[in-house]
Length: 364
Ligand code: SF4
Ligand code: SF4
Ligand code: SF4
Image 1 (tube, rainbow, N blue to C red):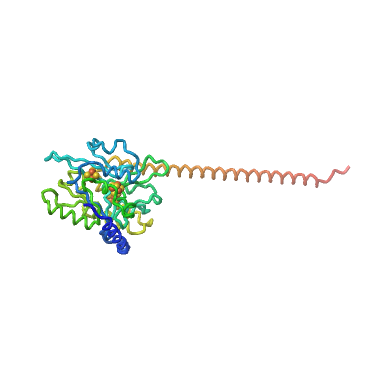
Image 2 (image 1 turned 45 degrees about the horizontal axis):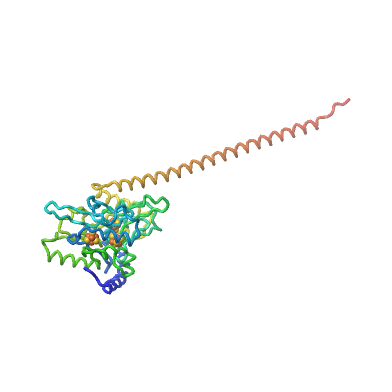
């Protein structure tokens, strides 16, 4: 489904007008947040997708990511199931249905949750949901704790482990900078089969429902992302059960933030909230136990290792400074003792000299 630029800019205005409502939504932080009014989303119709990887190529280009090891027209990469990485914000995976010769292609990227677990876990608010519907990242605020990676139920945020100086958390931004300029997300613009559609989430839900109703034999009667984890801005429809095409069906409809005392994404974080936050992360992590993969284990291990390393450095510095202080104190005491001894010796010398001079001379 293509949309005109005029329609698009109209929607952009509506999303802007929704900002006031957004503030109110933020203030009411004990209720589930149903998404910003008029915010955008993307609908992926897997029945239309041909696995051409044009969306991957466009994503690479618009985000100025490094060139891939294998070119985008090399479809042999589809033989393996891939996941997003710090330099790959989206991947298309291929799944073989048991009852069909035809494969199913599924695009994977950040789902831009309505109440993102990643943002709830981020205590400096480096990740946040904005009015366009995108979940965006501010590297200037990020402290590199990587709790977002642990919290995301879809295993999306990646970390630039190879960047020694300024590593960042990376993921799809829903092309937020392009949307703000009135442009379509790169992947949507490049899809030759209209397997990706951009529009307001409400409109996309209607489109998805219409297709499912019109072709009941072609689609599973479910819009993935309408309810999952409280709803996501990225929606998917399919002719195959989602669990058979690599999508989690065990997530439930509760938002990540409902595992904490309230949507932490909507309130300023203070130190006192840490126990609540960590309880929330623990609850989310428990749900993800079954699918703990190498990267998450690595991320957690890395976080612990970093914390240990930092603690060891601090301890070493502390020990060093204590040793120096102790040595200085001993030196001072020794100096004082020597000075006192010298003073006493001088006084005693003076006393004996004075005594000597006062001794009456023997009369001859
Ligand atoms: S560009 Fe469109 S058809 Fe091609 S892989 Fe991506 S979503 Fe599928
Ligand atoms: S999919 Fe993961 S990274 Fe994307 S918004 Fe949701 S929780 Fe955050
Ligand atoms: S919306 Fe933009 S950043 Fe996200 S997958 Fe598409 S092209 Fe990449």
